[in-house]
Amino acid sequence: MPARYIGKPQVEFLSDGRNVKLLADLVFFDPHETQWAVPAGAVVDGASIPKPFWSVVGGPFEGGYRDASIIHDWYCDRRTRTWQATHRVFYDAMLISGVSTTKAKIMYYAVRFGGPRWEERTVMNNVLTRDTIYNFSSKQTDMNSLFKKTIVQIPYPMQELKKNKQLEIFSKNALDIEQRDYSLDEIDIIADNFSVNN
Image 1: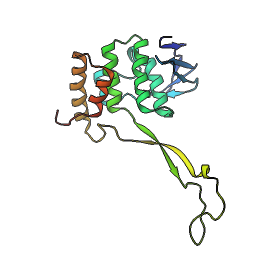
Image 2: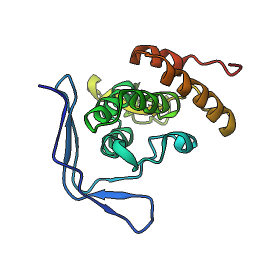
Image 3: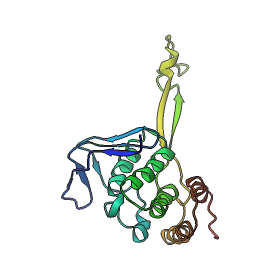
Image 4: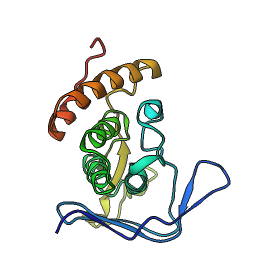
């Protein structure tokens, strides 16, 4: 089956002037039939679209990518899927929302270039108890209990750049994406391997 939404977003704008709260579940199925569900009660703010680029692409709840930004925000907060898949579903959901392919590619580039990134790491020895002499557990421990999976933030390409330099690089590459028919894989390369001097 093709990518699709189940339901339409029903939201309440909260009094803080930034956040919206979902009043009903919003579900999206991507082209691979993977379900991306956001539950009623979820609060999102569009922050997964990098703020420095709003002047170029628009705010998170404007235009046809509003619904996609709800899905993207939720999964950027929850981090239950990879950052790559989370950014890619933003693109897929924008297309179903009626955003043009070119605009969707520029928005995808924005989150790939400046959006959050994370990875799962496994740490060991997190449950060993302290012994007063040798500083280790003196009792039998189940090996499985020694491992703990955590999700940690990892750097993204533009993180160390000043806001005006971020916007300069983004604007230049967004114009290039608009003028050429880059594939998403090519956009990934542009986003992940930029040169500050370009």
